Each structure stands twice: as structure tokens, then as C-alpha cells.
Image 1 (tube, rainbow, N blue to C red):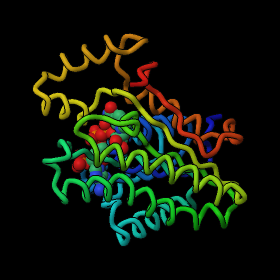
Image 2 (cartoon, rainbow, N blue to C red):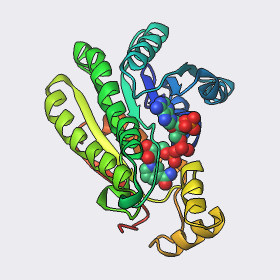
Image 3 (tube, protein in one colour):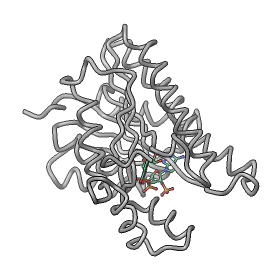
Image 4 (cartoon, protein in one colour):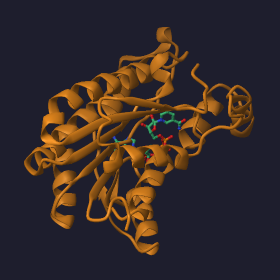
Length: 253
Ligand code: NAP
């Protein structure tokens, strides 16, 4: 028996990194997974891994910041598996720059991809959740929501995820829907490798410095985040709602 036997999950931005680890974890524990990324080709690798390991998954291409793409993607997953029970809003990007150099486009792109996408996906999935009186939404915030040099756009979008989460928890709780967020610290992925390069470090040196500044003396892995997302997506946490869980090895700043 897996915690997600009979459940259908959607994970956005699941071609790589944290999203791929979440998709694999939910599938390992029995969920049928809609693996969403910008193109179906990019999402297919994760779906193939899940199927190879004995699970069930489909790859769906969608830009989750666009309403029509979101509607089509949720319909595709519901059409394939019959229902939708769990939504993980994971897709996210950075366009870092200090405020005086940050363009309108840097701001709009990050807020649209990181925050509007979670609004659109949640609005679309709640139709299923409210009708069946069951649903779980887990969205990816970030430690950067507390402020991070060069990330005004990203930090604002991730703080927005916290506000969205606490509000949706109030609105959807009476319909059997739990809404929570996870705020990772430094997790070794393509995103943090790119940040390292932007500030002039080799990714391994950047990781080493971050590990030294972290009480548990290591950086996080995508699997560290997947474990907490799985807890929040499972029925054992059904009295937890409206929360943002910080997963950062104790590195609060
Ligand atoms: P990642 O390796 O860059 O993966 C993000 C995935 O999202 C990529 O596959 C990307 O596709 C996809 N994506 C981007 N825009 C999309 C869109 N509009 N529609 C659909 N998919 C889209 O990032 P990650 O490090 O795994 O991060 C995952 C989440 O955790 C993000 O929300 C991030 O902000 C958050 N987070 C990460 C860290 C960390 O340390 N890594 C810390 C805190 C929070 P392309 O590659 O094709 O663009």
C-alpha cells in the first residue's frame, strides 16, 4: 500500500530538478502523475522514468503561466486518469538583477511564471477538488521570500505564494482541500548552478560555501523537498493547511 494509491497528481515544471523528484516520489508511493513542463518532449523523460520504475505517468506540454495552456493541461490529465487529487505548483524561474538594472520584462516574466501560474493552476484544479470534496495543493515558495540581494522579482513572487497559500487554505478548506507551501533553502539544481555562475562562482564552490553557512553543513537535494511535499500531499497531514514549511537545513538567512 502506498500513501497515494488511487490518487492522481499534477506536478508542474517536472522535467528536471525538484519537480522531477516530486513526480518520482509521488509515483513511487502509488500516484498516477501528470508530468507538466514547457514542452511534452521535456516532460517525457520524467514520465518515462516513472513508467520504467513500474508507475503511471503522462507527459504534458504547457506554459503554466498561460490560461489556455493550463486549462488544456488539467483536462488532459483528468481525461487520462479520470480525476485529479493533488496539485504541486513547482514551475519557477529566476531573472536576477539588482533593482536599478531590473527591467520591466525581468519583473513581469518572473512574477507571471512563478505566481500567476500557481493562481491559474489552482483555479483550474479546484473545480475538480471542490466537486469531489477532496484535494491537496502544495506550492513552491523559497527562503528568498525573506529577502535576497538581486532577487526583488523572485522574492516578491515567492512571498506572493505564501499569501496565495494562506488565502486558498481559508477558501477551500471547507471543501476538503488542504493548501500548503514549501520554502526550500539552497537545493542543488540547474537553477542554483545558474545563480552560482551569475555571481562568478563554480557551482561546486558555491555549494561548498552554502553548506558551510548551513547548520546541518550540507546543501539540500531535490529529494529533501520531495519528502516534505509528499507529507503535505498525504492524508496524514490533513490538519495542516495554510502553512509554509521551511526546508533549509536551519539556514534561515
Ligand atoms: P529548475 O531546475 O530550473 O526546474 C524548473 C522547471 O520548470 C524547468 O524544467 C523549467 O523548464 C520549468 N518551467 C519554467 N517555466 C515554466 C512554465 N512557464 N511552464 C511550465 N514549466 C516551466 O528549478 P528547481 O531548482 O528544480 O526549482 C523548482 C522550484 O523550486 C521553483 O519554483 C523554484 O523557484 C523553487 N526553489 C528552488 C530552490 C533551489 O535552491 N533550487 C530554492 C527555493 C525554491 P525549462 O528548463 O525548459 O525552463
